Length: 130
Image 1 (spheres, rainbow, N blue to C red):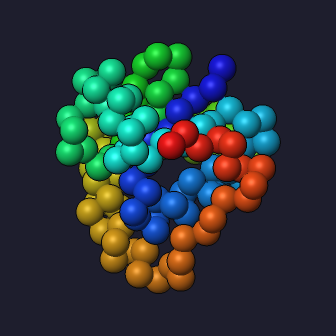
Image 2: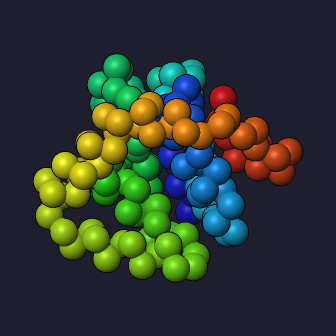
């Protein structure tokens, strides 16, 4: 079953995360939607997400996961050692989300060290909904 990741396409840090997933998702489970795209707005409305939200969301089995829970479920579905991070799903969500929020608040500062957004390959582009 396909999983949809809603992400902030204006954030270099978020774009790097998308490429991280693309490069490790050999089963092509994940598809990507920019939060502010027409499809993103449609999904936010369908799942009753606030219109001005700028978090990371995973839609899997018609259920929405956000912040740390979304990130860890993505790790769980990837292959390789990254899968082991899903063990942190056992940590209480309020603790995980506190860490997530610190990273999210500083993502623009963190991304200053990243050079540029990478464009997906022709093959990868088919996994983006616009």
